[in-house]
Image (tube, rainbow, N blue to C red):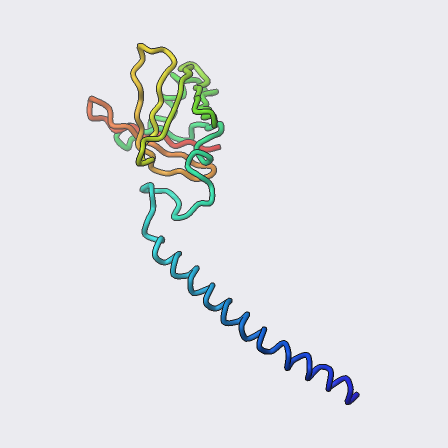
Length: 162
């Protein structure tokens, strides 16, 4: 019994400095992470976007998107839009900078983010069609919101889900 206590005592004696150092390091790491999160908590890229994401903007954009809502000047026009575009309306954004729209308003082309990554630019394959620029409002793994102010002054907003 005495030998057992002696062995435990020796183990604690030799491990105690290591345990203390580990605890100090853990506390420093925790304080560092908490400070970084606090500093960046107010630095959102998009109005309604996430504060922090491990995925790149391009990775979050790519995929097949279904229309969740469509509004003009904050008035819901989703049912009218789907009547024109088709209930099978989808926006497909590929990693290779290509996109396609499925439905009655079928279209193909290329896309890119602007340099500040606040806007997405769609360039239709038909060179007569003008490019379309949309301001990204929300960009999450399964949500994409963007808006466009048209030449008429109307503000059109699209909400997509994957």
